[in-house]
Length: 414
Image (cartoon, rainbow, N blue to C red; front, side, top):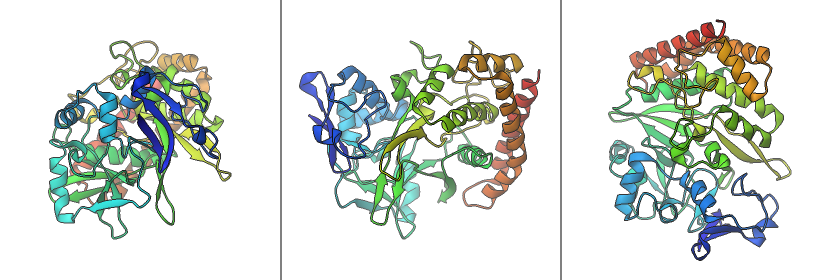
């Protein structure tokens, strides 16, 4: 059996002898404030097939080069989802641990400031520090990153034995120069125009720049960090990670599919989701695939769990890198559209597809474009005042974002 845990509570199990089917524990079903593993798998005593659980779990694992490296170092096949989740599933996206529950007393290994650069340098060879005793970490995606906890003394620490992280460190990348400034500016700008976006700051470790992103699926209490459950839209819609783009082999979710998740959300989040689509187009984020949108299972004052739209994350302006894909992750008006190729008629088609008023959608595009253009200089100044940014790189990113906003705004009127 593979136990599935929320902190020290077992919420269910995956049975290898039953085709890896998942079942909730009866005790969890009767627990006040219980939340489902997924919006796809309601809280009941019906088993969920191993095939569905495998897709859902695959979306918690690293991707691309990181997955291949980890599989080789742990003796698993890259396709051995159940084996890998037992190896890496102590601390994942969301609230759950797999294979073993978190310890009642959390344990961390502090990273000395002089050692942080070395740790970041080692990530390509040892993603998520795989192989270190007590370390069981996983985050999705192909980018180098590391979940860490911020200690009271201001140092970073590696969570051990399923302890909770508080931040994700994302170091600079020679293949995508300026990625730290790029993501920091796009997240800062999103917050400046009123969108809910992950909080971040730029820092340095020796010669390395990195982005420290505060985890929105963790919340601090007086005694410890508590986990909040979340799942991305790929998991909700039942797509494996290799089909996160609409143009993927076998097909992936389009805007209409993504918008269907709004049926699970409060009414206010439906407009927020549309604004998220618009903002990603405005900044030229061609990597806004299904796994870059998530739902957060948030408790209210009475302890009842409500699914809400999670803050935006992984925001990037692709204009900064000529070699990066220039087409959006979802089709626009039925076809692949480049960053500079979305016009008035395409927005009208999008509104029709989503069941929205086209006039109101176009006004929203115009309003967000105006707000982003006005807020951009202040966002740049805020980042310039912090640690870890290169002013020349930041100006380059800012110019690319500005050009994207102006192009999208002008085309929307044609």
